[in-house]
Length: 91
Image 1 (cartoon, one colour):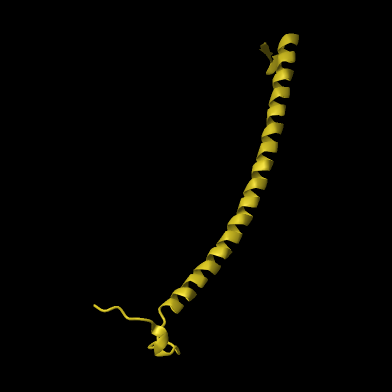
Image 2 (cartoon, helix red, strand yellow):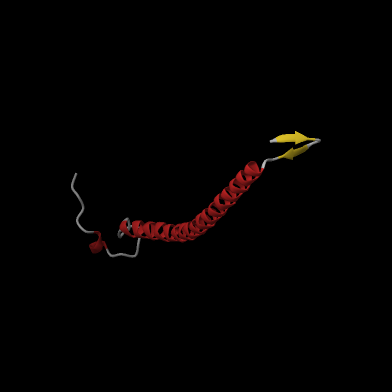
């Protein structure tokens, strides 16, 4: 390879090697693009799952609070009759 007046002069062998290198790089880029596209699809699916899980978590947290509230009810803080309080522990 030599440079003349700002131009690169290649031998036929160097030119063929350069074409092979370019083809290999193009093939690598194609595979990488396919990989990136698959990864983006996976990310999108995971984001959908995360959003559904966030909704479900909020629902379950609400339900837990609701059940805990019921658990702590007795005849003094609800409309339950005293007989529903169960046995009190003796200290």
